[in-house]
Image 1 (cartoon, helix red, strand yellow):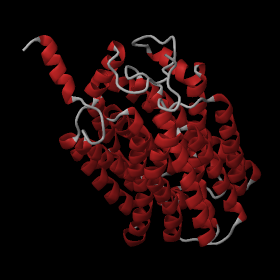
Image 2 (cartoon, one colour):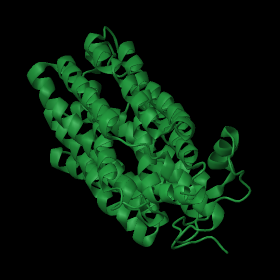
Image 3 (tube, rainbow, N blue to C red):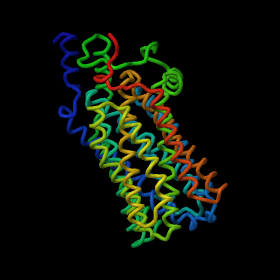
Image 4 (cartoon, rainbow, N blue to C red):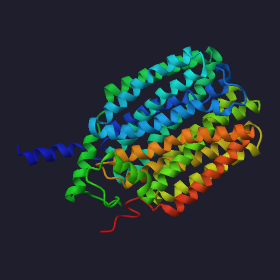
Length: 438
C-alpha cells in the first residue's frame, strides 16, 4: 500500500456527520449530562443554606463569592483547555476535568465555613472548564457544518437538563439525609461514574479536526465555504487567537459580549433567584421545582432551537433569546406565587435555549479547524468570566440598594443592550445562508 493510499484510507475513517459517528455522539452527550449534574447539585441547596455556613443575612456580595471563584477559574480554564486540547487531545483534557472534581464533595461535607465552599468552587471551575469544553469541541469535531446548531443544542440540552435535575434531586435528598450528606453522596457518585465512562468509552476526536483542516487546505472540502476571518496565520499563536476573538473581529467580539451578558443572567438565577424565592416563603423543595423548570426548559428547548438555527441562521435566534431572557427576568419581581414564578422561569429557559447553543455554533461556523478549539476556548473564557463579573456586579447592586429586586432590573437592562449590540455589530455566520465570497 502506498503512503497516499494509506493516508486516504485513514482519512476515510474520520468521516464527519452525526449518523456516521452516532455512538460517539451519544457518549459525548452522556458525558455532558454527568458534568451538568455536578454543577446542578449546587443550584438549589447551597444558596438557601448559606447562613448555616456563616454568611450574614443581607451580605449579598459575600454570598456571591462562591460564584466569583467559579467564574474566574472556569473562564481561564476554558481557554487553557482549548489550547491544550490542540496539543494533547480532547480526551486527556476531559479526564483531567474529572480528576479535578474529586475534592468537591469532601470539601462540602467537611466545610467549617463559607470559605471552603468558595475554594470547592475553584475545583468546580476546573472541572467545568475542562470537561464541558471538551464535550462541545468533540461534537463540533465529528459533525458537519450544517449540523452544528443541532449538535450544540443536543450538547447543551443534555448538560442543562442535568443542571435542573441535579438541583431538584439534591433538594429532595437534602430533606431526607441533610444538605451536606446529600451533596456529598450525590456528588461523589456522579463524579466517579462520569470519570469511568469517559475513560472506557470516549474516543479522541482531534483527528477529525485535522482531516477537516486538510480538506480546507487542498480544496476538497465539500459544502459552503465559511467566512473564516482574513489575515490569520495558518497555526496562530495564543495571543493572536485571543485578541482576534475578543476584540479584532467584529462578529466574534459581539458573540463574546453576548456570552458575558448571558452568564451575568445565569449568576443571578443561580444565587439570587433561589434566595429571592426563599425570602418570599417558598421551601427548599418548592425552590427546587422552580429552578428545575428553568434548567429543564432551557435544556429541552435546545433540541429545537439548535436545529432552528441550522434552518434560519444563528443571528435572529440569539437576539430573540437575549430579549426573551430579559423579559422573563424582569417579570420575577412583578409577579407573585409559585405558578407565576414557574412561568417566568420557563420563559427564561426558552430565552436561554434560543441564544446559548447558537452562540457556540455561530463561533464554530467561522473558526478554522486548526484553531477552532482555541477560539471556542476564548469565547468560553469571556462567557464564563461573566459569572464572576455578574456575581460582583449583582452583589454590589443588591447590597448597595438593599434590594434583590434591583439586581433583576439591572440584569434585564444588560441583556437588552447586549441584544442591540449584537444586532448592529455581528453578521450571520451560517455558511449556507452567508457563505464566503469566492
